Amino acid sequence: MSTPDRLVIATRASRLALWQAEHVQARLQALYPECEVVLLKMTTRGDQILDRTLSKVGGKGLFVKELETALLDGRADLAVHSLKDVPVDLQSPFSLPVIMERDDPRDAFVSNLHASLDDLPTGAVIGTSSLRREAQLRARYPRLVVRPLRGNLDTRLGKLDKGEYDAIILAAAGLRRLGLAERIRSLLDPSVSLPAAGQGALGIEILESRDELAGWLRPLICAETAACALAERAVSRVLGGSCQVPLAAYAQLDGGRLTVDALVAEPDGSRIVRSRQAGDAAQALALGETAARQLLDQGADTILARLLPPTA
Image 1 (cartoon, helix red, strand yellow):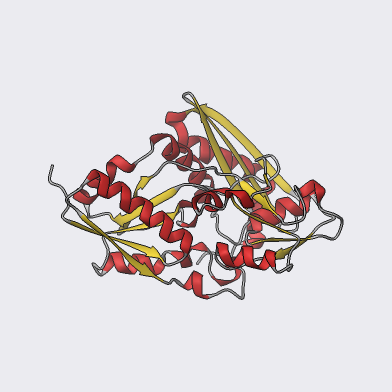
Image 2: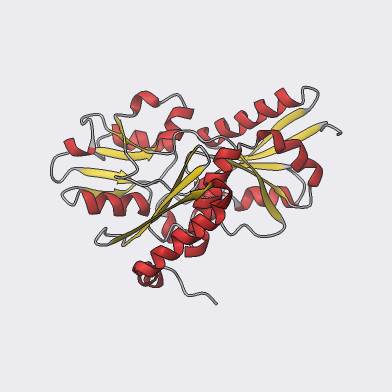
């Protein structure tokens, strides 16, 4: 097989996104020492709109559109994303041939004054960017005040350090990747805060017509993470998941057995429906779809009908 001479990686310009792109860059340079691997740094609409929650401005797809344009016009060969930011209904001419090894998928509790959620006093203000986290927090800790928190990871930590929040919830993987694991006071068990589909994993997007490029990238695939992500993203796809819906899906692989936990919630946490499916890892897609249908059977459809815009 031929090897690449030059590859261009499209990436957001935030510190975390750059870490992710540089991680892929290093992996590719190790695989193909003669290849020049360069970064195309871009600012997306999701990075620019910081005064409103993602659920009100178009969702996480805002973080990938500009990168996809760079793939289409030939400025870039591949784009590196946090997998949870990649729309589950990715359409032609794009494909997602690589899902890389997952870091810790859990949510992290970060505070300068308190050790855990249970230690927060009544009325304490906790910040999160996610309806998924917000709904689960409101359900379990109604005595707390949950407020929106936007911005990149450093901006969010800065708001905490200025005293605007008593605590904030962030993805553990992002903190770990930027060498900020010491900011984590405690990790939230999935029973407390079920992660988002794909949380902690990286995905590589290319044009589906680039078969040779897909072959070059194949060594970066983590089969275990890909199986889990396939199930999780199937849950979201069946339910029409987006930032407008408090939706979580988390799969764990033990030997050859895959367990998928999923939930849909009212944004205020007043109602949460949950499902669990387990079976052979080879049936990852079917397990995710079954978990989603089980949620619909339990009444998730009424929550979704109210929260999701009508389809044309």
